[in-house]
Length: 499
Ligand code: ZN
Image (cartoon, rainbow, N blue to C red):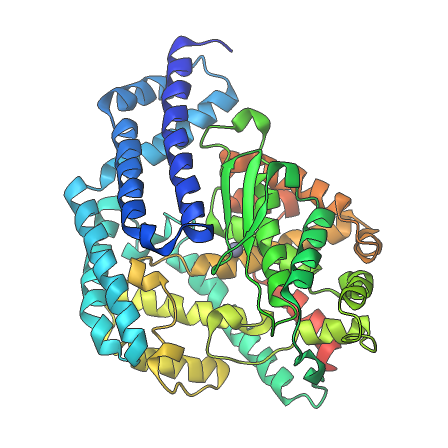
């Protein structure tokens, strides 16, 4: 439809998005190619672009344009959605006073430096005063954003709109109880996998080639994206036709580059699946981090860690690594890649223990923000919880409460989205299995077209047109629930560990 104020609005918002994309290109370069001495200048460049985008977006004229359009009854449904979603972002951007944003950024960078120092000496005390400051600022931030019931909801909303402490507690209590019971049964099973053969050196160039082949098979479009190497794997999006991934190669690890590439590939397929007409607008975004994570985890775990997948790809691995995997069967590959072992470090955790790492962080964050514990209590509470959930005794804080970068960035409310990603993935995947009777035959043939079409139709294309819970509900017929994930774990690991 032609509509002058709407055209003006699209043009302005397009400019804001272009500036943010330029920032994203610089950030991608920072992680992938930038020489080490360029860090200071890059920080300045990013700050300038960030301030510029904020200034254009929060201009009163933009605000007036948005309110006029929000009250314009002549807009069609798509235009209305675009205006409503932009208004949501605009109101959030206006809620935080500039002085607060500056103070927060300053304290963040001090806290990050202190966290790096604290990790060197495994001394939480070095980080403690900075975390205390950040927690106070986060409480203020929740007040600025506004919330119902718990101030934590004000923080959660930034990452997972519509979610609440109350809903999470119900879901997480059940998960914590049942997953830790499952882990205990697995650890006690006499049927443990033999993984001694994994202890070899795996040529990184060969690993790289295999990651590229699998990404192509998944349907990732290399004409509209590329893969590079970085220390921390990530996905970034400059446009529908430029969605990039990175991976990390280790010569002692056979699977980590592959699982990393499949994970990021799942994120990237989501972003290559937004509607072309939504380019250069906020609609070409995921509605929450949890739903984004459901896509990466589904590909990584439900597909990449399945037996049919390994029935297809074990041959390709044997051909690449001649003489190293000759006697290894798909079943052995499958058992090795799904080995369950309680460990201290979240990012290395398997599917059975992962959510327990998340739940303990969530419980600590809520207690801090609601004022039930002090920052000084964090190490003791952490150690007590990891003992209860995983039976582990923390030796020092680097393997405990100092391991994640999130708190040093003042990010609280983020962790729960990882566990929600697992739950959404399992719930959507149960439905995919029902709707696609030949799914596993396809996977065994290295064909993922039906799976990708299902995801495009039921998840990807909506962008921010639907909230996370709506996507899950509409695709599966019921509200997000922990039951499918628990059924998935129970079924898969009972077979693997002969429970
Ligand atoms: Zn991810």
